[in-house]
Length: 455
Image (cartoon, rainbow, N blue to C red):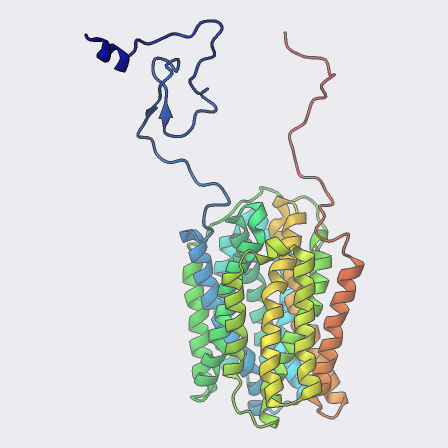
């Protein structure tokens, strides 16, 4: 062999005791790089190995399992969204009710839902999320069909109580399943994506409801029951999630969810007032249909939740919640003080901006503080706020309207005052919310100066 050939292919050199080997240790060798001769060769070879899995920051949350959760949620909340403008009109036009009766009819389901949510949360921790979603959507489908039999307010209230029982299970099941599929530092993003299905249903639902009600309430209840049944079928493919064999003694309400829950309840009351009484108020001022108004509101929420899915994680729960409470307070007070068709449209935009951040921000605080084995219990406690905002909120606003001789703008002003109270509560509890009160379970650490038990 010639000199040029020997220069091009130098003989292999073995490292001496004074030379460090140039190969990568097994634990630090980069992906796709393999050493030769037991790792002591200076050169490397690029091997045909599969790529390393993406880390939690690179992996998309929108997996097939997450898509199933969103599909079931969208079908279910489409039905619930269609009930928002139609149940008040059903009570007023078909059952002859006034402001107080509308509040009772709209908020009746919140009573059973509020009572059952913490209890079904425990079932979710022991039996899994799937059983909650499947059974809950089935109950809702049956209960909406029962609206066809409601010839008086008390019959409607009974059916709405059954709807509340199903709602308690559905929301805890799907909301917890969405959190199960996300790493800890992306809880807000998961809540944002999940709420896209929620508010997507609320965006589609009201126009669908108003379109169907022109053909009669019986057809309306039949179609909405079908939407809930579709959600029931899709729920069979929802992941079961992590479960525990037994549940230790717990308080009825999960402590880490109480503070955020109170703030959420007060912050949701403006939307409850808007959804329950704006359809009636709009008729008084010459706006025949509010389906487009609800569409603008929910569409804005969807855009912010999709484009800014990580905003709750980046802003932090406190800043996100503050912006949200300010938005909903300003929005509902615009209707109370301005009182025109234009004010309804502007309020829909302000409410959309606020509601897009409220639930994900506060939900992140709950999930960051609650132990993993109490996740469904925490979701159940936190979601009681939805029921109280409609049960207490709708009833309270209805009473205010009745006491002011049917002045719906007075009810909107009362809702704005309660939302401002949410800002006060948040300021008072700012150092307690989002802090884990009980340490997570970790392996026992042995002090360095402890005697060794090795032989």
